[in-house]
Length: 342
Image 1 (cartoon, rainbow, N blue to C red):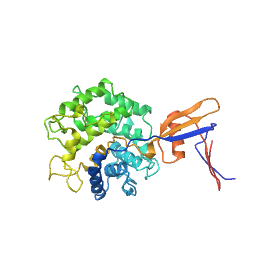
Image 2: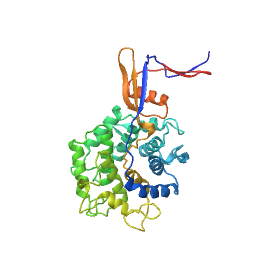
Image 3: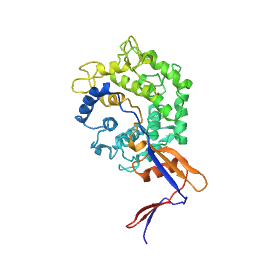
Image 4: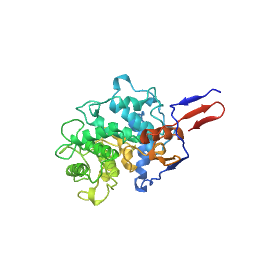
């Protein structure tokens, strides 16, 4: 009898239970803005960021062909990270969807306790978020990158895209990455980062990229997503200044066609893909059916694995579980009978 075996080493599996974690629906008072933003993004050429946003909004039938391969001149930590995040949001497996295994390619950039360029921090931030989207936030390379970010926090509490001055966008992204990697929201690093963000909030409720610059929709979007990642509400008094909150300011920049102006009407709308997630009350990585599963595997003497894992199929979940829990497994394909898991 012919058969194919996928990565062999036997373990007895008695029970596999997979449950879906339920998350709350978005607030209805954002629905009008959400609907317009979705229509706008659907009318534009697709990018990894717009695909991620539309998938987060529950859109289906999104053209994913632009994620099938990374252009050679753009291959980098950040490119692979955003491809992974977009594909996971769309319910696809980033290890097999494209011409390359995007996860392996991302990991190949790890060196000297960090990802990519040692002068940059944003590549470490997005590598953590991408690997977190597939349930690999506890890998040693992720934890080392987490420490690299922590060790390079500026004295003002923030981070920049590189080892220089802080900005709101990268500080917000760093907060999300550190939380994803297991840093407590009560930690000194996170609390100092929150204080940095609050120190830059303007009287109109909005956030600028840098101190004394004009608030913009990109900065609003990143900060609001970080606030949701913290489990906080951006419309409460904690994030209100002079009676205005960041969501108020973000909404004020939405054009009639659903896109979002950068700083003021008439400039540009390149921030639009980032604005949908905060309207949806979501953060990074986006939680979808692909990455909301819990797997429990019982052996004959003890529990082999009980963890949150990511995948579009049961086989994906078993493979992801093995990477987290360290168990061995066999998947054998018998002609005419399907797959057998042992």
